[in-house]
Length: 394
Length: 157
Image 1: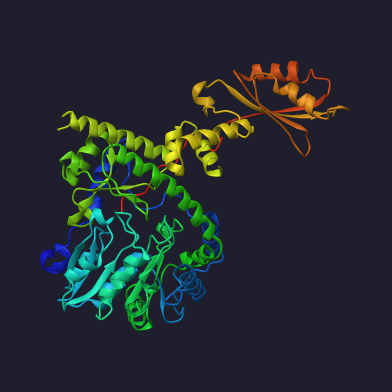
Image 2: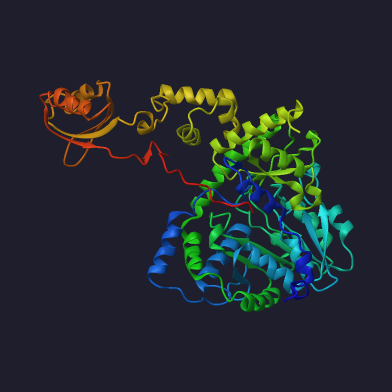
């Protein structure tokens, strides 16, 4: 008999499964559920990109690529960084094509964190940072952002959490789940706090193309910050390419050369067909990003307005495709709210505390759905709130 | 304006208030723009998209190609307008290629359409030739997928 308890790593056993998953499982088991839960675009990958992958398969270009990715693609990514965030990364030594943005995050944390190190994680945020930090024996230290600051990180909040053990800061903007962004002046004040420290910043910018007010600004753009920043980005959200599993990192070569070793041993290289297709995405499909963004923007306005009218306070997010309404007025916890909503009205949303304890009192609503779908969901949520108020829902 | 038209094409029942929110405009502005589009003849009307085969399984759709002798004064216009005036006709278009006019018709049954072709269309002097194609199944109409809608297979991540 194998003693699996003994066989498995304690850190893995202690790791909690993602809180998003639970509601997905409930939704899966029910008929007629309207979901507002997804974290990926409802658009299909633009046809030119899909066609390129088909062509590549027909030609049988199915071998490994260089560890850090096709040179052709790295050059396009380098141009992309210059165009979008005015920052130069050398395609030879400073860019890796990763298996989604997720792998980039994993590479950064595992390449830098040692037991006892502290990693500052801005919360609410995507679910993957803390578990990886803990797997490395590090300590994830949450920095809670607040609705009254539009969920932006402030210099004071950051300063308070820095100790002599702090090694990394995870800066996830535009933010999933809040939709918050950091403007240039916000980043500048963060930079002032970090300037004389040795803290490295992982800037997870996977939603950068979905910025609705002005242009996205990267932390790497702030004066003197490039040397301490690893920028994570990818094709999933911008080009609606989630299933292609393709992201990229850009950073100083001293860091990237180390990340590359881990990537080389763990992954070898990102999927070849996806990489060829991504070259086409970068060269020919920038216009598609704009079209999708405009569509998201209309939905964003619609959903924010709808939730505020329903009496669930909802700050106007400036990025990503989520709104993060406050449900405290119902007197329910996030988990209760989501559970009652799905069982009584068959609408699935994600409890805010799945993204960090400070997300309690909020729910994440995705608007990566058609307007008609969103309208129906909002209608049902309105009925739910009414019935809740009248005591018809227990 | 383009965005307004796209939204209305997707769902003409969105209220002016909803459209205003989505477009970041005032309700009055939206009402005014729609009125202008109607006045300019860009918006011709608002209609429901019906899956005829679900509504009446016996109904039949036909595309009828017509070869027409152009008239000395009016060319094809007069004939096309005459055909357009029949109630059962849904669309009439002047075409390039091997025939001149294409007519879209929905009838209660095949006999209904046959009678329409033989007694109405073929009876017009200028019509030299008709070819009738009956529809077998609709997959998409007016930009809407009819039957076999794609299932949302996205998970929650």
